[in-house]
Amino acid sequence: MERYVLGIDAGTESIRTGIYNEKGDCISFGCSENTNIHQHPGWCEQSVQQWTDSMVESIRLAFKDSPVRPEQIEGVGIDGTSCTVVHLDSEGKPLRDAIMWMDIRAAKEADDIAACGDGALKYVGHGKVSAEWFPCKNLWVKRHEPEIYAQASMIFEHTDWIAYWLTGEVTANICTVSIRWFYNQKEGGFPVSLYEKIGLGDIFDKLPKRVVNLGEVIGGVSAKVAALTGLREGIPVAGGGADAYMGVIGVNALKPGKLALITGSSQLHIGMTETELHAPGIFGTFPSAIVPGMEVVEAGQISTGSIIKWFVTNFLNADLKKEAEERGIHIYRLLDEKAAKVPPGSEGLVVLEHWQGNRTPWVDANSRGVIRGLTLKHTTGHLFRAIMEGVVYGTAIILKRMEEGGVYIDEIITCGGATKSDLWMQIHADVTGKRITIPVEQQAVSLGSAIAATVAAGIHPDLGNAAEKMVRIKKVIEPIAENHELYKEYVRQYESTYEHLKEDSKRLVQTLES
Image (cartoon, rainbow, N blue to C red):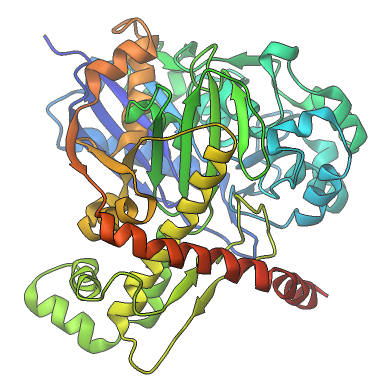
């Protein structure tokens, strides 16, 4: 008799709920869209009330045409975006819209934190601090919205809000506190000295006191949520984490040498290591952020799939859309076909994919997107391919920094929207020179949350055991040596483009903000 759990993945564009069995098969799926609010360049917020509505809708849609009934579900796993910061009052009501992970308004605060000199800055290689991180955003709120900060009784992240909504329990999860709050379980928890130096020494009264591990039982589904969704009251909700980190579980990249490449609106690169190390240009290593006793190294690109969407939304002519419609294919497939006819390197185009700044390795919120090398020969296909290549050039620089820091990767296990493009996956292999492995289940983040749910429900004993049983491989893509050699020069050009433009980009951003 099959056993079933839910994997709830609260992403940037939507909240997705998958019903999975103990073998990792997705039985059915429900999806409800989110709406981003961009009040200023570099800002991004979402309504917490919208999350409530989307959560209920996505769960209901998962069961709409499913053979599985809500009362058959034995556990719930969760993940959310990070750092997406939520401020609630004493009654649990939101004081403002959530500040989304991609929001980079706190660039000055990030610089101030990086300059404080505290030992906890080892997690950013004692270099720059990303404006996305939890202390940066809270310092911005304290400085610019002091009444909100003063009224806040609970401050936590997206995943923690989901746990609170499902169970009523106020918790923080080991994943996000380790990777974005400078928390170190081995060294006693929060680095109080860092928070005091930056003017957030009073934040600890507003943070959850309980920190839960991935797969640990947070509590049971509340009566209120049970009434809204049909789930049984009291079934366990598993400790979750940042969406991409749950994706590491969902692709089973839980051993050293394997890198999880989580693609979507953004792109994250996460690997496991047994040894603690810290180096400029990479984040971490973070202790026990996924598996107790293991270190995690991370890097990421803020704008990847979102640039593809931006290009398609804003710059396609009517003839291309008509051609796709007449042939009965998706516009992305048509663009893939045209890009495939363009030689590697897009005949001299170099794209810097910093539409929302750079997360790693330069940690530069002021950097901006560049399309360089344009001539009258270049077509839509050239531009589309160049954007795909530019994203992977950024990945190649990240892998170089990781290896310089002592983390060697021999296999990239990929999931998410980019895997729908065979061309883009081959570009990943060719540019990086690494084997690309693609699992069967591409909703790896929700599968990772479902895997955690099986542990909380007692179906599988631990995350590693569950991942081995629930993750299967679909295909493997090897790099083409000739293309890899060609791309080395383009990666060099990509890096040079950033170095030559970074100061001008900073001045231009300051001009816009003045």
